[in-house]
Image (cartoon, rainbow, N blue to C red; front, side):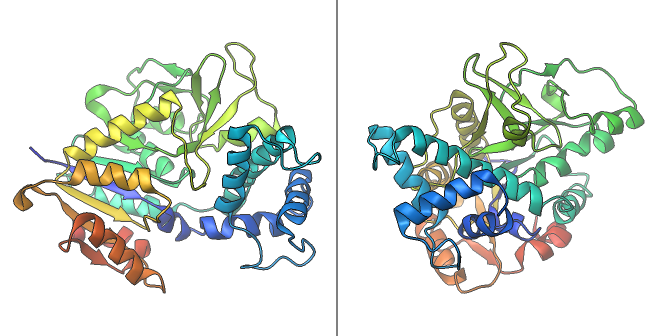
Length: 357
């Protein structure tokens, strides 16, 4: 039986808080991080491989992030050099620099953001019927805007945040007063294991900028309310268990996304479980581009019902622009003609979510 509600957050929700979209990400990194040595490395690759005039960077005249990373990933997967200068070792370095661009530019652009996400969470749970047991979230974004808003529910509601995976810096939960809980949410390097009956799910199938992955002991560390992935580059932070170099646990935007990390695989399984049991699903700022075939397969497989009366209600929150109609067409092809659409955008939805749910 379908019951409960799932909110799926896409890039449009973060864009409302000033985050760059995938299409804007590379140009924004190249122009706003000029003095960074890693950016110079990326510019050299774009100049040599894509014939980009790096002295006069313009939108539409540089490859997209997906195009750049996809070609690099194909070369690395086949272990083939592009040239003597751009061999596999150099390509791996460029790939790492591009992922750094994601972390750095999101850190720079979202330092004071999060008001809309906080408003959304506050307004959603102002209704006492909405609880951690019947409301879940899936975020396709790397940023921690939604994470931070939900973590604050520990202080106000005594609810834990459950990402669906284990973290190596988990501690066991202990009773805390409201004041102690507020202080605890600001401590980035530890988080207690979610309590089964007091936890709200936030699943991030593309990974997150507050997760640090150790490929040696195969564990993940969470940096609560902090984009800790930047420490990998700025502090060369190592695993506290075996002193191995850590990696960001994110699936970068490519046309051939790979989700073979065991922690991400666990998240995908849990996401399927939540979607299969949902009676209402809200897609917020999700354009579902053609390159997201695995995500669309997940949504189709878990939300499809042969009997129309058994199908969940699907509502899509969009911002009116030149892509709106094509986005609506993609949703109708995937879920049928009964999808509900709103072009209010996340800004209005965050304040009026009670009217929608």
